[in-house]
Image (tube, rainbow, N blue to C red; front, side, top):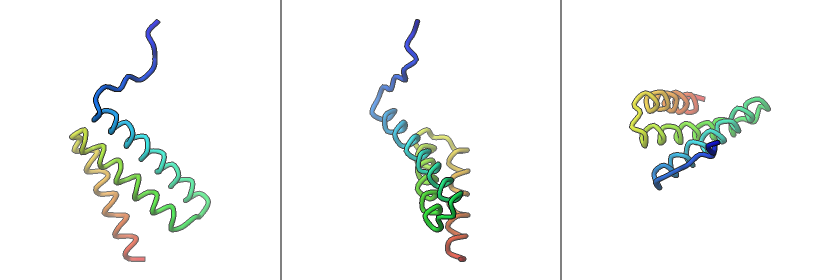
Length: 83
């Protein structure tokens, strides 16, 4: 039976893996902070998560992933500066 462990090859793959999971964990913390009303910490966490996922899109050369997170980043910054 083959192992179900994730095999990560190059240092680039390890970087993408770390950024992807780190950004996901930070965004989950942002959702949690929103649920508990911890403003503005929730926004700061979301900013870190969005920037992390944009970086993953750039490393994967995935334009759709980059676009979604660039628009989200712009909307968040616009909202934060207008408050």
